[in-house]
Image (tube, rainbow, N blue to C red):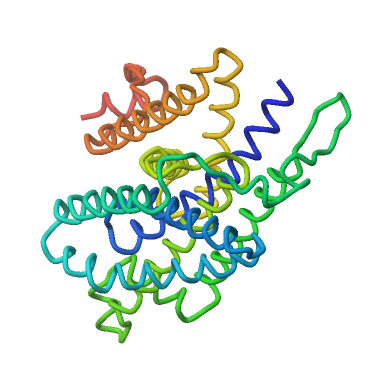
Length: 312
């Protein structure tokens, strides 16, 4: 039980990084980027390609993440910005098509074999600490959690303390009002897309260090990111971290029941939270409390109140 609690929390740090970019893009541009998981895979394969050329894994990550951020800026400028003018459906269709393009492109370049960065990391890929109670904790998952918290904290500081962050928050609240105040909405959207895709690439590289990746694994990553965002709440980075941790815990405890319970536990938690949010919105829309509690009948007036009611 304790081991599942620890492992689920460590896994949640990875899910938080994966989901942060998806949450940011939706919060600023109000679109669901269906290529998010495929962009994470593209970043992971970019790191693997550089490592294959003899680069250090850490240097490969430092180069690939900003490069994918530049890809995000171009994607926003030449594709997403044009689809936003045509409603909600077109961005979904376009990003779905881009996802298929990325998947087949990765398959054509790298083949269908599963790959990993474990060999390049050496001892770090299997090094661990033994905690009291004979609980074994991998050093790499701990490093992933620490990196995830650091990335989210840095992004939170960016949004709260910098001019770009204030512009992003203004554009996410009301793009038209922000434009009237001198905010370059197009530039803000490009910056948000760059950060989102860079975070996706970082999450893909983090996945390649602790598991295997393959060209058609992007949709599963998209599902995990979407579930973490919904569980934690859209628009909050720390809520995304909480959602990632809860998703990781649900999967970890689900694996205790059966091997198939790993994915099923996360899906059930997602459906429960989604159903609760929809029920809450429905009740609030009707002007009712969230929990349907029967109203008590009004008590009969007594004493002074009864005397006042009896007066003409």
